[in-house]
Every structure is written in C-alpha cells, then in structure tokens.
Image (cartoon, rainbow, N blue to C red; front, side, top):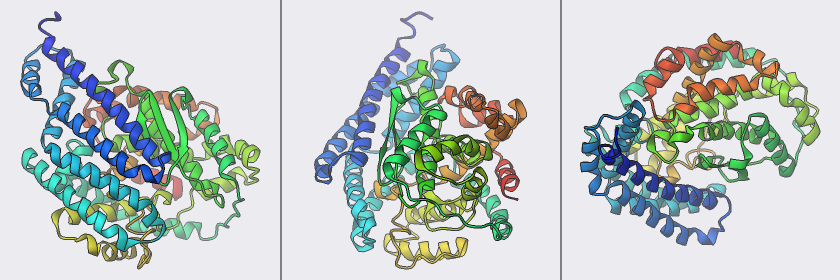
Length: 494
C-alpha cells in the first residue's frame, strides 16, 4: 500500500497520537491531584483540567474527522489498521455524543465534588456531600440522555458503553441474576465451614515498612519501576499511562493485610498497562480493551495469584524480614481467604465482593432513570446492605454510600466492571491451567513468570486490536462464561 492511498488513515493516526499526548498530561494531572496537590490548589486545578478536557474533546470532535474516517474505511488496510480505525471511530462517536460545554461543566463539578468528598467522607458529612452529588448527578443524567439519543440505547446502557463497549443492562442483569441464584448459599456455606477457624493477631507495622514491602512484592510480580511508581492516596488506584504507570494505595498501621493486597491488586492493573502493545502505543488500538478486562487483570493478580497458597508462601519471608511479622504461611492463607461480610467494598473478600457490586448496579440504574433521588440514597443503601449482607449502615455514610470515589467524580456505569472482571479472571485461570498447568504449583515452583507470560501473550499484548468476545475466544475458547467464577470460588473455599 503506497503512502498516498493510505493518507487518510495516516492523517487519523497522527491526529490520535496528538490526542494521546494531551491525555497523558491529563492522566498525570489526575494522579497529582489525588496524591501530591495541596487542598488549596483544587479550584485552579479543576479549571485547568476542565480546559484540558475541553481541548481533548475538541480534537476528538474535529470537523475533519467524519470525512477522513469515511474515506479511510474505503481503503485496503491491514487487519490491525482496521482494528485501529474501528477504535478511532468508536472514540469519535463517543466524543461527538456530548457537547463541549457539558464536558467542561461536568469536569468542573466532578473536581469540586471529589475535592470536598475527601474531608466530607472523613467527617461522615452526608449533608455537605449531598448537594455536590446532586449537582454532579444532574450533569451525569444529562450526559446519559444525550448519549442514549445519539447511540439509540437506554441512558444507562449509554453510560455502560463508555466502559464496556457492547455490554448492555440486559446482558449484565442476566449474568448477575445467575450469580444471585447461588451466591447467598455459597456465602453461608463458607462461613459455616470457617466458623471454627481461629482469628489471628496482626502486628502493628509502620506505613514506611509497609511501603518497602509493597515495592518488594511489586518487584516479585514483575513491575517495571523504570516506567512507574507507588504513592499514597485516600482511594487506591492505578493511573498515568503505559510508559509511566502511577500506583497508589493506603496503609493501616494496625493491619498491613489490606494495604498489601491493595498494592497487589493495583500492580495487576499496572502490569496490563505496561504490557500493552508497544507498536500501537499512542493509538486507540494500543489501549486496554475495556474496564472489565482491566479489572480482570488486577483481580487475577490479587485473587487468583495474590491470595493463593503459592504466592503467600513466596512472600512470607519478606513479611518476616520487613515487617517482623511472625504469621506462618498457613495463618496468612487463612487470613487472606477469610470470608466475612463487611461495609467496605475495597476490603471485601472475593466471595462477598459481588454483593457490593450488585448493590451499586441497582443504585446506578435507579439514579439514572430517576427512580431513586440522591437524597434517598442512604436509605436505599442501608436496605440493600441489610438484604445482601445483613449489615446495617444507618447513619454511617462514610462506610456506606460515601465510601467510593466513583460517584464523587461522576463515573456511573463502571461498577459492573469489577464483577465482570472477576469472571474474566477466573476464566483466564481455567484456560491457563488447561494449557500450562496448575497456577499454585507453578508459583510454588518459582515459575510465576510463566503465569505472567501467558497473560502477556493472550491479553496484554492484544490491547484493543480484538473485540472482547473474540479476545476471550482466542484466549479461552469461549466468550464470557460465569460458570468458571463459580467453580473458582467453590474450589478455593469449599
């Protein structure tokens, strides 16, 4: 193919490379705002980030794109170029669905809401948080309505599509209804089985020593510190870009176990980012396939690997050296596979975790449809927690409906990705074991790299070159099948 008759495609590739540079800066601005920025910088930063978001939006909605995309679609392109063009068109359609003024207004409202949420959550200040969330939720609903009209789907489907292209409310409901049919009984069975297990005293450890341990564990998992770093934030996350991945966690000096697994989880996200196809960096086809697939990698790292017997045996000496922790390998295994319903989603065990997502999925659908007002969210939350996990959250907003950052930054439609990701992770493990052997045995034999190499080959290196169902078929032989998740939980806990 000559450069001339390929020109329309090359024009698009160059344009989206430019967009990726601005998104790089935006990602680092987000990271800094959550980790290093003084509180007083919030208002000015919010305005600057809104301006940057507006500029990125203007690039993605450039008048020349529609005609150039149409002409590029007539070209004879390679399969990978066709995939990139598909993703370019997807980004163009997503961006054009929303007016620039709304993008700017929502970005400003989200920054204001999230900045205030940090202290409001600490102070259990629902009355302070409520008006900010109401303002932001109105903008989210406006965005959902506009996207729905453009894409010819329901408002909530339009929000889901931002994170899970092709996934619908109906398809998620079908999957989650399967989970509801067996999960409550499984939770009860596991709790009955574990009732006679002793509890263990966890030693107090400094945040500094936990950070050293975290970096050691990240090295064991193969994190590239030349292209990333670990910091502290109020809500653990993985941000930045593939060449500069920023991880954060939070430390509890009375219980190191949560912070450690937070690091393992975020390292899974980071490994995916660092493993994305280098040849397509800066292009839409070089990005992660979907948020559920991203969560599958963090959950594979934390749940399939991190809480497994083999990995805990591997890191136990480091806990002793760096934390002075005398817990045995078996005691660590018991701690990390303990099933106990709790208030906090990010601290939940993998058996009760889906309940936290089922609640948020129902809340989001109702908030977007208008069936649930923001003012009624605490009562809805308390009712659902009581029903799903027998936990009362009346008046406990910081451990209830104010606990997550997602709604405080206007991200609705993301939460289902966590449980979908757990299902993808279980399916990857099942396929991996049929191809290269038992994961626990491989790790115990010092072959963790074999596990990571399988993920690099079948998931990370694919970026967005394949659509999700095709990626799953090539990697595992079938599209998403929740039966693998059920099998994983039953095998580990029963």
